[in-house]
Amino acid sequence: MRKTEEQTAGIVDAASVDSIVTCMARVGPVQAGVWAWTGSVESTTALLLNRTLAFAPSPEYSGGQTGPFEALRRSLAPFLSDAFPAEQKRQEALRKTKAWTRKHAERIAVEFSKLMADANCRQWLESEVELQWENHSQASNGLFNETLVPEISSVLNIPLEELRRLLILSRDRETVRQYCKTTDGADFHTTCDSYVLAALLRGVYHDYLARDRRQQILHHQLRRNPRLLPKVLRKPRMIVPIPNTAEYLARIILGSAAREAKSKRIQAYSHYLANGREAHFRESIDLSHKTYDSAAKDAAVAAARRLGIHTVPQVAYRLIDLAAAAGIGVITSFFVDPFWSLTIGGGSYVASLHKDVGERIGEAALDTRKRVTRLADLGPGRIGSSADTDSPGGE
Picture 1 (cartoon, rainbow, N blue to C red):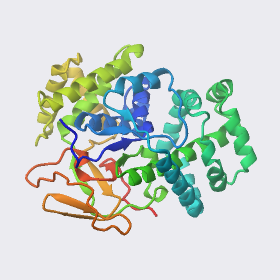
Picture 2: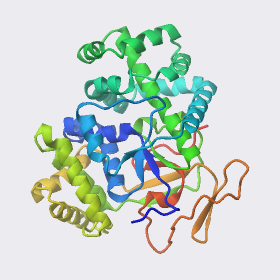
Picture 3: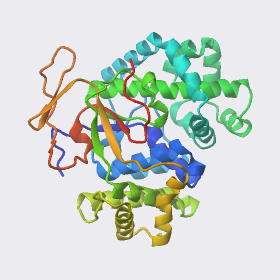
């Protein structure tokens, strides 16, 4: 399908996609954790149903990934490209990120303390240290961003010299390996705090970059506290229902790939996902929403068999139900909170940006007679899902 003018490209932060590596290493939603499982199902479902997604770029140079992260990026490259903003846009988004952080440093510190006490965040950080830190250190030249050190210092109340010392240490592979083994000591704990806060501030950067480029942004669960992001509109929130069949197929893809030999899991996941996308866009599998849950499960299992996923039906049904057993519900919809005020009518939307209220930035193919399943139809904004509990907002 030809990419049309009205389709707004979306960017997905790498942390959301990297959750898939956690789910391949820690099999099942209980072992992987709520954030890793939810992020993996969201990313897989979004990639199954949408064409126009790319990785959100880092505010600094990002080198090559390593190990399973490199394998995942390489295998997803045909349909999840890297976004490369112009240098001027990158610098402007970074400037706004720094200014926003300085303005709200006290509030960020309070919300950061709450976040670090959250059980889901603690489980996510434990997985990051074990599975991601060595890769992140090599790919990003340290465990937190050098350009954000002044802002990290301000929020955490840590001297600049101390943060710069820890940043240098975090570039050393043996030091990082030692951190991952011992998970203790003052340097380790301060580096953990800096790592998490830098991740939050990169989310702010991605938000500003998406606004400037008139794109959508799908943040990792870590970054979805509206008090830790710039302001978006509270309404109109635009809903994109996720067919229950598609969500169940995403679970089967993740669970089936994780049942492969460890060395083959990433390859299997990417193969199943690529086949699913192609079949969906060719309309050779049925991913439509079903009124009855049992019918949705049957359709997802049938689609999996058509895609060549070799999991026997009894196991496929169990894979669908694993998340429910862990207390994780079905993701029923994506939503888009628009960056700017929208006027919807006559099959088009108009966004106001700064003083240019009448500027037309595209026409969404909003047909009230059918469900919209393409996020790109809804214009620039912040993507969330029904798994989120927080309302939009921020300042």
